[in-house]
Image (cartoon, rainbow, N blue to C red; front, side):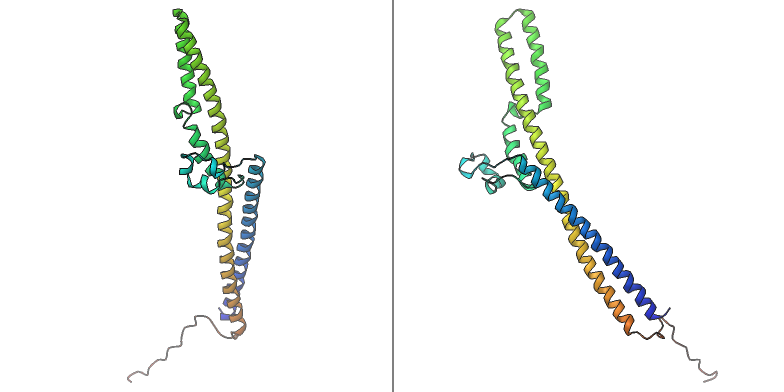
Length: 214
């Protein structure tokens, strides 16, 4: 194969690969922008604002992100993660001994059984006590349900924003690789233009036979 032909094949191939990587980078950038804009738009509609620094409790001040975002409106994935884990998560632990929605369902079942036993026994005092416990548990479970739901939605937004961030990183890698391949391809084409058509590639050197008896 002629060296000029090989340089042209390699040069054009690298330029084509650079173009494909450039297209991939543009697509990834578009996806990253969509994810960021969508998350910002959806979170902004919730109108959630972090507590100001002067209203944070001592326990809340132990969270670096709650202090950092104090007084700001929640509109980014990182802020959503902070609010979900450090604010909502913190306060959920103080409700019903930190029990989850599912665990409080088991508590309700146990209290209903106790109520039935108390009613059968005719113990009016026990009935009143258990009924109050059921009311308190129902209220706590409803509050926990709302908190866990909002926390889950915020963490989903955070996860979606992370996909956008990863897409942006991948786009940057694609742009850098495209630039490198473009330079290499251009160098190959320049070399092809300077290479004589008659020059071969990896042509074996002719061996000179020594005369017999020399």
